[in-house]
Length: 113
Picture 1 (cartoon, rainbow, N blue to C red):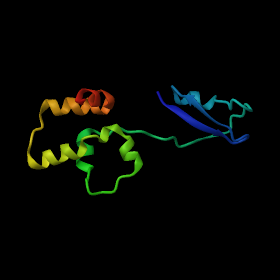
Picture 2 (picture 1 turned 60 degrees about the vertical axis):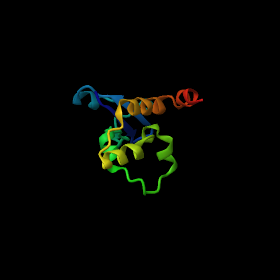
Picture 3 (picture 1 turned 60 degrees about the horizontal axis):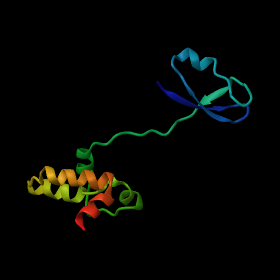
Picture 4 (picture 1 turned 90 degrees about the vertical axis):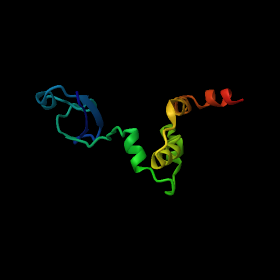
């Protein structure tokens, strides 16, 4: 069920609405001024990137910005990519440790002490 974003042409208010059928959009009024004159906005989108695609696109030599280091999914990418290049299976224990590092890094540090 798509949620569309609109801007009222009369008062420039931006608002969202859940549109179940195309006919629902015709009867939509601005919540501020009640006008039916509107234009649909282009919304942000998000998409899923598989870990395989992340590995394929990862280049250890490329410069990384702060966003790269804030994303916990990037933990272990260099090790996994290098192991794959060398044909080495790091095993289930490595995958489990990565999952824990990505979800709760503090627990892995505590276990190491």
